[in-house]
Each structure stands twice: as C-alpha cells, then as structure tokens.
Length: 161
Image (cartoon, rainbow, N blue to C red; front, side, top):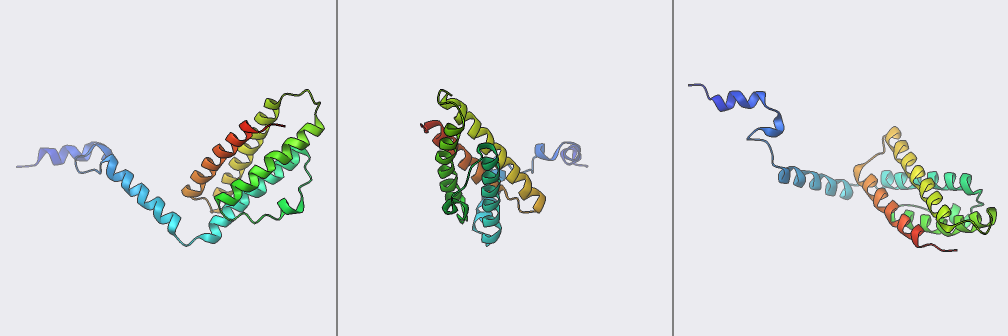
C-alpha cells in the first residue's frame, strides 16, 4: 500500500511539511550562525567594514556641513562598533557647531537634528552598499551598524547648542 501522506508531502511547500524544522529550530540555527560569525577570525574584514562606515560618514558630513575635520578625528582608527559609535558621537557636536555658524541663529535645533540624522542614515546605507559590492558584507556587521545608528540618533535627539 502506498503511503498517501508521503505522496502529498511532495506537493506541499517545504515549510509546511511534517518533517520540516520548526521556527524554534530555525531560530536556533540562525543564532548559532550569527554567534559563529561573530567569533570567527575575521578581524581585518570587520575592521574594514567599520572603517568604511566611518569614511562614508566623514565624507558626507564634510560635504553637508563644510567641516574641517581636526587631525585628531580624521586619524581615528575605527576598528569595532564601539569606536565607530564614539567617533560618530564626536561628529554630532562638531557638525552642530558648524551648522550653527553657517545658519541664522534663529534656526530651530530640530532642523539640525533631522538633517544630521538624514545624512548619517544615508552615509551608513551607502557604506553597507559598498560592503556588499566589495564582498565584505556580513549580517552581524549590518545589525551592529543599525543598532549603532539608533544610539547615535538618540544622542542627536538629546543634543543642544
């Protein structure tokens, strides 16, 4: 006798089959892969990704605010997400002062905040695109960059002249 269940399982999508992994098992597999990627010995590639994010941010902020980057900031060795975050936080104040000098004093702080966020988001997105084009993209780096972006956005929201 032919197993009817076995025949019907071939016709249904893989995710609906009885022998398919559960969402929990898939989630465990994804988490294990992320942890392995974070532990893997790719320090040079990871550092290159964060350095690329920093370079993109500096270039676009320089263009937007006509910044003269001090040598202390220009030579920052961005090697991980924490050093990138610290460098970007320093750029908030520098960009804010420059913006204030270029605009009328009566311009609202919210204009600077929204403008800075837009430039930063665009630069980080461009950096992720460049990582992808260069074959450097990694999910854990993208996730870290997105978390870092949220933290910097929060700092921009709290920034005052």
